[in-house]
Amino acid sequence: MPHFFIKNDNITDDLVIIDDKENYQHIARSLRAKIGEKILMVNENKIKIEGKIVEITKSDIKVQIEKKYPSENSLKFNLYLAQSPLRSDFQTLVVEKATELGVRGIYPIITDNCSVAKNVIEKKIPKWQKIMYEASKQCERADIPRCFDLTKLEDVIKNKFFDKVIAFCERDYKKTLKEFAKENPIKKDENVLVIIGPEGGFSKREFELFEKSDIIMLTLGDLILKAETAVIVGLGNIIYEFSNIQ
Image 1 (cartoon, rainbow, N blue to C red):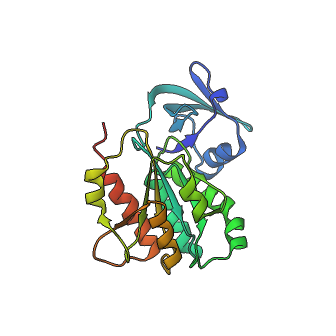
Image 2: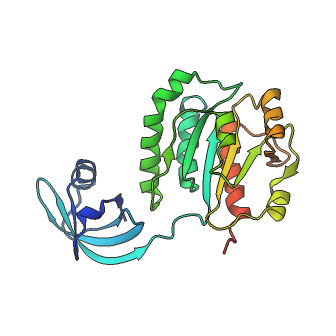
């Protein structure tokens, strides 16, 4: 069933009126939806709304509301990713899969071995935000994660917003993720930041920065993973290890 984000202002007691250009074009032009077809919507309060199209005009689409219920398509803690951007399609993959894996936001970070120029990263942030929006629709998320502005690694680490900060470092790790999870259970609604480096890995200076800042350095196992693979495996393992939060 197609999935669309809608504003609360477009909802009446029993109707949703879809009149924004993007959703209208997608439903009426791309999908060529017909009266009687069903669609799934999510409002700003993360409430899913199932409905049936009852009218399509040249400017809007009216949907009869059939069912409402809170969305459960989200993690019980707030997962964020700080990552040194990769080249072209690899970064597109990272942004898309991180969105599917439930991150609330991605911080593009400048690292010593970053392979992409600062000005190139800054120009691509709007594109990555668009990818996150489309991926959110495809996996029926109730919210859209944010792609933050380009940030220094040092500034992300200093951010007091995060309750736990984890860096995956295959060369200089201190523990496995399983060991860390056993000793440091994540609580409901905690803000957790995962840091993953560039293709060339973190520099000696950055390892020292982690040590000085008491950032836990973990391994993802015996294999050496490419940066884009490390993002998917790292986030996926964190979700698995902390999936029993009450």
